[in-house]
Length: 516
Image (cartoon, rainbow, N blue to C red; front, side):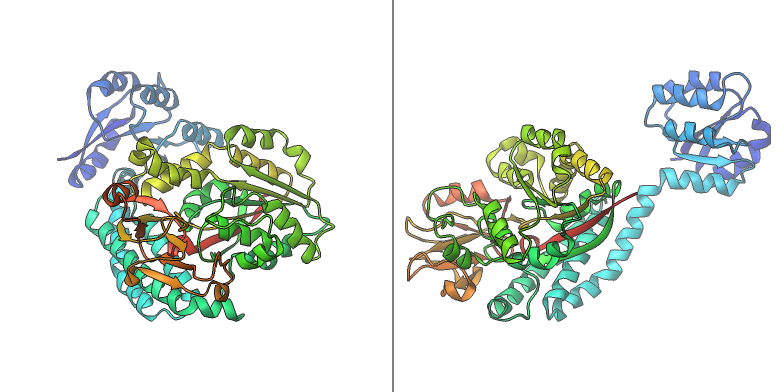
């Protein structure tokens, strides 16, 4: 079926060779010499695109452009003009034209413009699919040959890149191939962590972990004559950061993008406390016995982050710096921070912790409507981006940019979409987390978990002598036998964290410098 083009120009006789050329290329062109007649036709015809001359007798192109958009807002329009004045182009762009061409135009220019507009998605899809097909083998070899934590960072970055490149294509088979490759990568990543995590706990030959991030990557940006904003978004995965990156890029330059490894368990109680305390969980428990709470204890597990941070700053020789700490749990408080930002801008370090994405991931489990909205990683990213785009946080970032503040954006852990249950038996003291368990009398499938028998060797609190930790691999979730089927149906295809996967453990730390 030919593509239908409407061409509005008072010099149509001169343009007939152009129309003949386009016809040979599959574009059926209807030509009209004035805008008024064109506006009569447009409501009743299904044109794929409109070409319109800017300078015509009677109703000009700019006026006609506005009226066409009122009738059919989504109809692509190409403005063609002899006038190179900047304000003409700005008016046309402001009216959401698809393209802007300067006369004289040759047939190939018109063709390329139409292909860019009408075949863009098709061309992008074909190119992306072709490129991934070429890259597939290279990534497979990278997974097979990965030796250290930097290799796994690179693999995860590549997989996220292709996930974003292919997320809007209609080729379901290619998307399935990518997801299978991602699963293969997580199989390899689990084996890597299983082999190396103990050594990381004993030596300095290791990646930057949760407890080292503030010292290694935040401290260098702090001083008495600087004001820095540290934003920690709970549960922010690397792919979600890449989805929201363009929103931050409007106000900030990406000075540096790094990735660190969350400690195990990759859960807020452990990873975030380690970040702010600058210590591993067992050390926190020892130093703050009244503030640290284990899994089996009642109470808020992240109630003393500010106190932990102040203690770390004293140990790092930063006690002379002024600090403001906020934990945002609702929109009203977020709005208050925005309204009062002028009071905080002069603090050497302002920390804002956002729990929105963590709340969103849990809502996928507990709320049927949210569960329907978040069907997969693509929709998870989309909702994350939509929230950021309309959040007070983005306005806070804009205010920080206006004040010349550096922004450090990070998270405490990621999350993974779980699909496969694995049965675990424990006593009433066993922790309830879906991706890890801590308890005394655990019975489990050894093929599905990474086991820590000696908690002290991994700098984790030991509740009693016989307690151990187990961590789920890949996309497995841990289910108790009581009401097993109900439990499985409830948690299957939800987002969980605490276990071992690239999504949970390899997480972003981004340094942003304000644009002038």
